[in-house]
Length: 182
Ligand code: FE
Image 1 (cartoon, protein in one colour):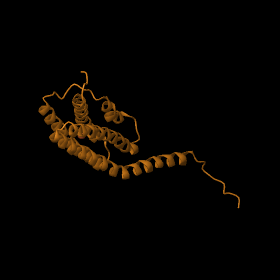
Image 2 (image 1 turned 135 degrees about the vertical axis):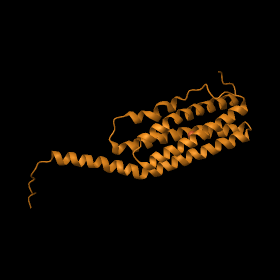
Image 3 (image 1 turned 30 degrees about the vertical axis):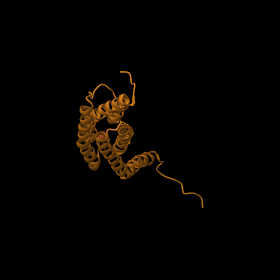
Image 4 (image 1 turned 90 degrees about the vertical axis):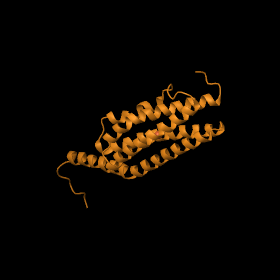
């Protein structure tokens, strides 16, 4: 479809977000399952409920525009969301890696919703702008919660991998060490 106007671009951007949210509904249960931290798992489960709401808001906007929600494949989200889950990774650092991925996804959505909210305002669609603003605020809250969870989880990852290093050093250390000369 040729994009001839801001209205066309607005619909195209909404479709990208709709596809991104649909992918996230599939990815979030996998991310919850892969999380070691109970708080992190709960966070993903809560965000899954929110994400269903985000999809509904977009469907409301498409219905009012008499446009179909599908048709745009969001390539940014596809791999980022789940690739990390299959990687061979020390369990101490896995949660930190999952958070890093989840925050990329949130920032992608924050950028997208900020744009369509601004477009909706320019195009005079106040109702859509308000719905998109609500979702934008929820994405920002989720990003903030992930930052807070990361504060502890990153430290655990750092200490966990340090322990592994110490064990390696202990194993490779000679059994007796000479005292340094006085
Ligand atoms: Fe969302």
